[in-house]
Length: 265
Ligand code: BV8
Ligand code: ZN
Image (cartoon, rainbow, N blue to C red):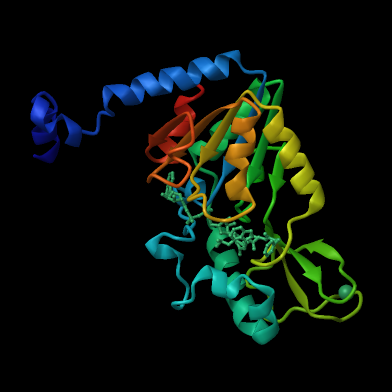
């Protein structure tokens, strides 16, 4: 019944907007982006939680971003960990349990393929879920860390840990001190090498793709202007408009899993 109705609706101009068929400008914009990519030797990509939403990973600012009514910023901070490390570890344990069941979606997979298609292609992600590497991307800067790594608060040793569940309040095998997630928390600086590598990729690309990020967390939120100032053609692919939408060359609204693979066909 529904599908028939839709088919019918598709052909009356007044209802066209509601039909799933993207507006003509959408296709024309997609062709423009593909033409820019066809001329590019170096492409830089910035991703956020939106690219993993189609894999079922909650975003930060979406309705599903809250945990026990705590805003992520309240838990992802050194102050929160000092105040109540058990609570913070319970939150990360919950996210690890959730992410462990998730797989890369067509957007992650398309970006891994894109890496092989360009002379230079660097992917800067704000996500700690590890899904880009799981999809086969290698040229990746995980600027906010990775949820499958832990760091000792005593000797600083960083180790891979994929235990689900992880014992709440895990301790270091070497020195016995408390372990913390090897993740960049609010108020903490990013790894200087990651910043260096990201800046080089932003300054040397002909095309920058910004995918699935609300563009409110710094320094990642300052990356698009850097690429733009260096002459790159900057494209935003996002479900909703963002503060970036006004400064990029082209902003397409839609789901990453639908839009990103189309860049390669
Ligand atoms: C620092 C790890 C030095 C934790 C994270 C300048 C101005 C103002 C504030 C600051 C500033 N400089 C520094 C700050 C402070 C702070 C900051 O930016 N605060 C914000 C809130 C204003 N920055 C820092 O503290 C950084 N450190 O700068 O150190 C310093 C320190 C103090 C003061 C000066 C300098 C460290 C920031 C890193 C924090 N750690 N993550 C963890 O994951 O557990 S940030 C975390 O939040 C994520 O990694 C990500 O970066 C951010 C969430 O944003 P998004 O990923 O974009 O997700 P969001 O849900 O918001 O949006 C999703 C988007 O996707 C939406 O637009 C939606 O429409 C779209 N979408 C949804 N579904 C889909 C989709 N799109 C496509 N397809 C779909 N299916
Ligand atoms: Zn230790």
